[in-house]
Amino acid sequence: MAVVASNLSSLKEDNAEKYKRYKELANSFEAKYGKVPKFICCAPGRVNLIGEHIDYCGYSVLPMAVSQDISMAVATTNDGSLNFSNLEGSFQDYNSSTKTFDIDSSKPEWFHYILCGFKGVYEFASLDIAAGIQVMVHGTVPKAAGMSSSSALVCAAGLATAFSNNCQISRHEMADICAKCERYIGTQGGGMDQSISFLAEKGTAKLISFNPLRAEDVILPDGAVFVITNSCVKMEKAATAHFNIRVAECKIATQILAKHKSIDRTDIKKFIDVQNALKASFSEMLSLVKEVFHTEPYTREEICRLLEITDDVLKTSLLSQNTQDVQSFKLYQRSKHVFGEAYRVHQFKDVCNNKSDSNKLSTLGNLMTESHMSCSELYECSCPQLDTLTQLCRDAGALGSRLTGAGWGGCAVSLVPEKSVPNFLNQVQAGYYNKMSGINTENVMFASQPGGGAQVYTM
Ligand code: NG1
Ligand code: MG
Image 1 (tube, rainbow, N blue to C red):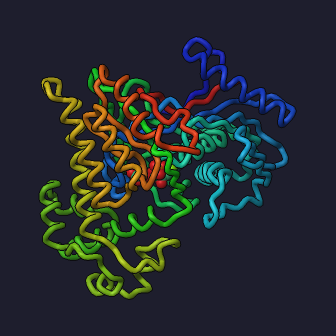
Image 2: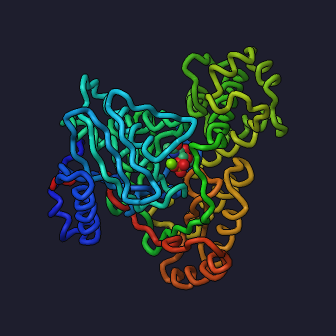
Image 3: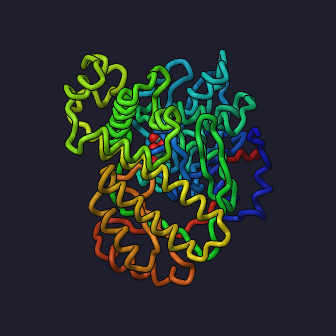
């Protein structure tokens, strides 16, 4: 299914607010570049309901798109120039050309994400000459908050490039290209964010599975409201090594498990490959983790000894550029999180699809809270503020609450029974936000319904 453009005027009735916003964006484009944009493209952010830090291990995740998006007014240039501007004043203009641009992963800046999307589509479509593009960006996805503003920017830029060059690329292919090309920025993400941004459909969350990429509807139960609360702790994932250290720990643990089980390791890259090779259940994988790993962190020497490799091979085959010097790896804790979390995703989906369960909401809530505890204690991707906030949310009437996205800051998502929402919002406001000073707490709490995927609108 390719992305099909529709006329912007079709939005007028469907979503007057978005229509107005896109119109204003088109006007700002015109004021900046002195011409009317050719089209507007937009890609939504997402909230992951459950399944954290397991996409890059090959496991299914369960996100939904939110209504907030990154949108872009776009026109092509015929001299190969790339001109990027952002309505948000703190982001400075970027000017370069299709021949000379550079993505500097040591110092990620907002426009690098556009360059990632541009480069991904350019390479995928094997374009000899890609048209240059002029873009004006406006984003409503909270930044550095685990709601995938970065991927939405990459996806919107990928779409802008595809449409500027008349490339027909399916939504699945776009998701795949954008998952790969966002890695030019240096983080080794798994593909959840770009997949939901392209494959989302209004009214349903999705079970996203990989290799091959699939998106299955997961109908959320009546009476459940998912409320997002921002901890207001910013986490610029690409600027730190936390994320890639976790990816490295998972890769190393994968190899040790496979070696322990004498599996031919040629095609074993992720935890799921080991599980498939063993045809084991999640409980069996959890027992294996307990049998194979000790709880103390592993040193590089021990890892090399277990895998019978040199430190150089460890560096080149299992560590990324920004994790070359990491000395200690928690293999037991990270593996235990991944297999437990992957199992919870399937339980969550089964509960949603099981019509007869009268306790649905509290079962889902419990799974979400278990997920948070595992992220916090085993994966160590929470932070004190997120731990406090999620506990406050539970105390305020949420049946479950967890961090969402990569963590170390950013947002929490809570499952709140519909009738308890007003009281919930009051309590969290009083218990968390009213205690903050010097922080802008506008739009920090909102209920979210599953939104649709990326779109293109012609003018
Ligand atoms: P965030 O940082 O929330 O955009 C990242 C990864 C995902 C996934 C989650 C953790 C990227 C682009 N995204 O999301 O693939 O691994 O962390 O579940 O790297
Ligand atoms: Mg991101």
